[in-house]
Image (cartoon, rainbow, N blue to C red):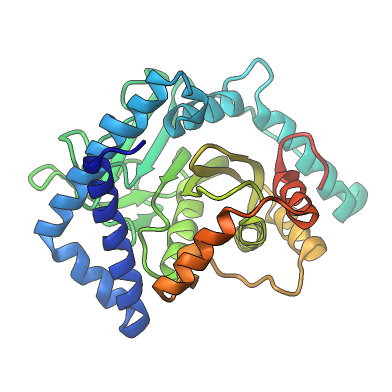
Length: 337
């Protein structure tokens, strides 16, 4: 059961998110976000609350309950290791799958000439890092950024505003301000958005974040997205499928989706050939699908709507729910979809 302190910290986080979304519906979302980034007092309170929630409650609960398989940090690390450094790295298995799709598209005209993807340490960009949780893993070379760093190893950076420059090989930093102003294109093996996209008040801003991640990743690099989700498996299946469609149009192919205890976790791969992910979009598009990144909270217009949503969470799964669950997990490795 959550303590009073945990409830208060969570309430602060949720209230900030809700206020941003409400303001973005009434005003220009860009102006709303810039005003938020300038509010040093609120950002400090937010960072402290998020840091304490993560380290004193979320992570500690996983250790005490022996539920480390439900830890978002452990999930990111394990996903990256199996993709890049497994006995048979998943990277090469998905490369073969992409080649088969391209052969179906181009016929005998597709003659791939791939180079080995060899790295000693996984170069990871942790966006919205807060307290740099991946720094303790020696096989990761981490760049941690946040608009309100909670520890000294995290660089100050507004990812929405940072430039991407082909001329760079390392981030453009200001030592004096402990900040990053620009990033090199196609330099990262993995980018993490852990509880980030729901912080941004508008779907367009979330799209911009994902497009920027696409520019920063090496071909075959991966984007790992973790989003809050306490509902039953499959409840947000259509929304997650629309994410897959939207990111597919950018050139991302979803290779993994898992529902942990309070979050949904996804891995998207930057395809060598964008035609592969776009082919999935052409085949699987349904009438409701649009190139937009909505989150469930976008549709919570009032307390009544939120109460109705909570009531829905208590309802047992139907046959339709089961079908949505199967659809949501169709992106797991080795499953044709």
